[in-house]
Picture (cartoon, rainbow, N blue to C red):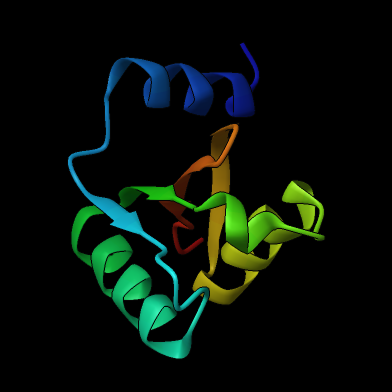
Length: 90
């Protein structure tokens, strides 16, 4: 099993206990600060986006931006829900 497949399997079996929702204000600096805090505290976080945020933007671009801004990696994405895991130090 590849490492990515193992992480996806973990995400499917271990449901993140923390959910961060992006509301009408969108992807603000406060949103990213909260997301970074929760990732640091819990290691794995589910992010729920609204359809308004994705309007006119590719979902893939948004997922990549979330991961880049929080120094994490996407381990699962379905619709407007993204599961992120904090990157581990080498």
